[in-house]
Length: 279
Image 1 (tube, rainbow, N blue to C red):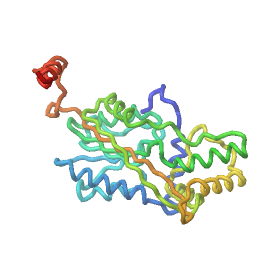
Image 2 (image 1 turned 180 degrees about the vertical axis):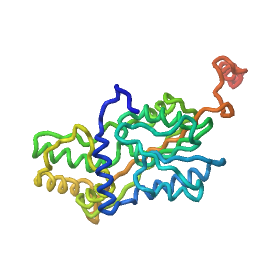
Image 3 (image 1 turned 30 degrees about the vertical axis):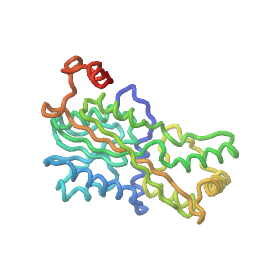
Image 4 (image 1 turned 45 degrees about the vertical axis):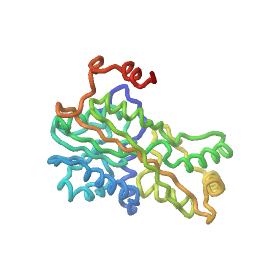
């Protein structure tokens, strides 16, 4: 459940409505398909069995389908508008999540809930979009709005970097946190085709502070023009960047490798340096 101090960045009720609309339109799942395949490969490298797995808020069923051969049935868990995780303490030994946690208002609180739901030595494996996602579209919109509307409307929430996310995992009580980044560049005929895919992904703007007035046609057309001028390849097709941030961490257990206590080293760094110095 979100803490009272967590800022309300995202309209999660609107997010759910946009995701329902995307399913009705016929969802664009290329990005989710890719991360589902990658997550299956990463889990394949984990040499242990999981008996109780939960998928935390991933839109659609592509991830669960990709993991079925490895895990069998994976429970689908919806965070809902209040971001409450409906799992008992120690109920699962694996939590997965794909392209969902970037829309959480209280990420530290949700990570702490996942940590409590995991059994000792349980694994969290998640992927969320990072701050460089759709950087080209954001730039083109900002330029067009500055030229024609006298200001830029909020379109992008602040995103944590890798070090921040590692610290958040530790703050939530996880052990052995690991983070890494993958970047995907997708090409489109034009910016309008990209925006149509974003609608079919349920990934359009759900910021609470978004501009509520309809986008002016002149602004939209200018954005498309700027995008084509600045982010097109020689064949005229535009580029769209998706940054994927991967997180993995374990619920603490006594069997895990532990850092040495301060002062417990048997040899000092100074002594080691002295031995390496020429006599």
